Length: 379
Ligand SMILES: *[C@@H]1O[C@H](CO)[C@@H](O)[C@H](O)[C@H]1NC(C)=O
Ligand SMILES: *[C@@H]1O[C@H](CO)[C@@H](O)[C@H](O)[C@H]1NC(C)=O
Ligand SMILES: *[C@@H]1O[C@H](CO)[C@@H](O)[C@H](O)[C@H]1NC(C)=O
Image (tube, rainbow, N blue to C red; front, top):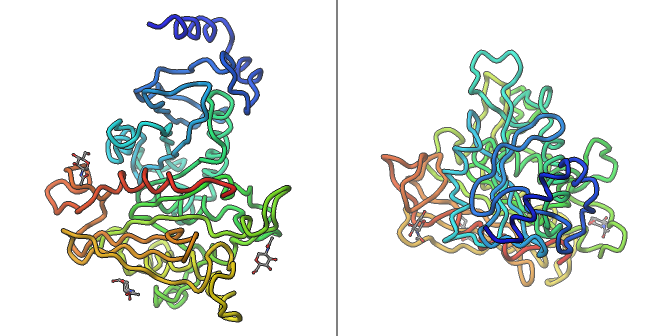
């Protein structure tokens, strides 16, 4: 054990954690200000927020408590766990990630549920009545900032299925827009980019089939709520920018169909994925309809919402669609993983999702890490 590590352990043992956390300012990364709360290079023991929500943290091997590190929050799928998600996304693998702190969050089982494994996120139909995952996320971010040296401009979120739905339809939409939406915490603006995988982008308030179908026309409420007033000292066009989002989906996804579906049992609507992704650029599309000047700033996506397709070699009709031009190119990306890819975390290697079935021609996790590296707040 290094002497500094031993010292850190001694120090943290001597001071009650709550006290140490309160003493260390969030912004303070001076030597000794934030003793390592858990060993680097492995998943931490269970951590709990004040409200008792569970999460685990992976510090990269070379984590330096005096250097600001980027952070990825990862949300598991419905009925999932932290441990399953960590095995599935492989984001802690040092061969793909040497820089990011990765944090796994645990969803709750609704009270009174007959199945104790039935965890769900605040995006599933009815879940918002019993779970506050935005609050959970805010608490985790605050705890991380108090105990670790994190870069507030480089906070990212990813997730699978319902976890992806939470990221792409709830977190990414939390006060990214409407100034009058008092219920929003504005968490969306604290994240630099989002990367949902096989996301369940449930639309609430669609109890009737005709409100949902056709699924490629249904209104996506988040799209209209992304604009906002600039914060203090913030460039107005930065405030108005579309949050960068990279979404993955397979064409053979039977759980969350690529073409969307209406679910009678829950009176819920799953939108067509391509239509959903396009909503991230459509606020610029609507504002650009009045002016066709190329290169003008349209809410972060410059110029008309140009679409650029790139085929994915080795896949069955897999294609990456990127929207935005110039500096904003690739701010919104949809990766259609292929006609044969199911409800999977795309990977060329076997994982819990693709076991026994076709594998993707690329690793979603490698793309996510690389793509997150392009974005930070205030740029
Ligand atoms: C953001 O865009 C909207 C709609 O285009 C516009 O009304 C608003 O003034 C813009 N806000 C800022 C801060 O630029
Ligand atoms: C891009 O690919 C999608 C899906 O295959 C297709 O629907 C769309 O028309 C393509 N766009 C362009 C500009 O080629
Ligand atoms: C995908 O990741 C696995 C490790 O999980 C690795 O063995 C494989 O080479 C990667 N595939 C590509 C195309 O990089």
